[in-house]
Image 1: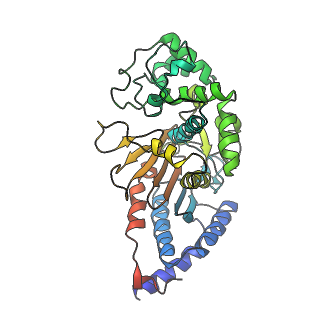
Image 2 (image 1 turned 90 degrees about the horizontal axis):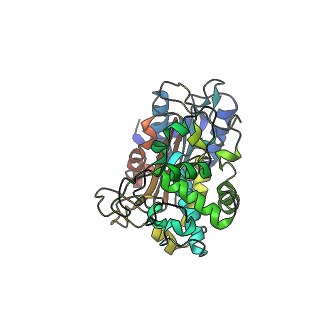
Image 3 (image 1 turned 180 degrees about the horizontal axis):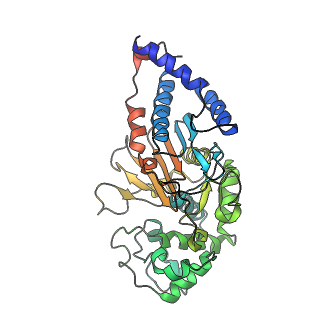
Length: 387
């Protein structure tokens, strides 16, 4: 049997089979969604979809991946699949509408909201944060330095240990701010010394959004981003029922549930829940300059920490291959309480790769394996007979 015939058979099997690790309604939805996607793909794209499915199915079957995936290029979804369980206790399968805690991928949303307000001349990136919050004791830290993690501030996650681990406590951003300035922890670095990744920066930016818009952070991003973009399954932890069926539960690698703590309710740095498809809608809107202008996005995709050699950070985005216009990638990963998330975008060919997991499998970060499939797919005669 030649290679092309084998591919045809495998693709037919792919079209006709649901997720082998799920049952019932979840598998039916998966099967139908993939049929619709495949019907819109050309021969080469179908082979890519098959190879992606082989990759993620194998990882799921070997216990190294439980989650949802979407891969798109130039406005076309090439692959979308949910593999595994949303809730181990009830054995509920993941579906395309299962919502995952984005962890630090939430920073992308926060940074975009700040840049929207920058375009409206409501926030000056060069102003000290203390210009907006006069009682802020770190007078020389600018808004821009919060965005690019060059503030040098201490991380509230570590500084507020005793406060965060109070039983049944849900800390909000105002309380985080009050605790933080009361303790007045010594900064790790002087502002603008070097890159130092810090959750405090983005929790403060959420407060800034609230201050200038006179709306809660949750309301602003819902009204200005999620609703206009049709992100129907995206919200902060404040706006969802954590016991709802479409909210995934977090687990470690041995399926032990992981509990939340008070810091889960501090917003800006984390605690947005979403799906791969909703993040795809966000990514496409960015590619089409519907959210912020191209020149504003250029600010977000600029490398601000030249001391970093292999990668860099812009405004809310990590950066790879900064000086290569063909390969330049903007992305963010996340890791929080059993969730791992990857949101990667290659700007030149408008590629979007989204992997969300509710289990601490490192495979959620292995986007390079997706790139290998996308960039090394066979072309030409070998695809002529693929249906």
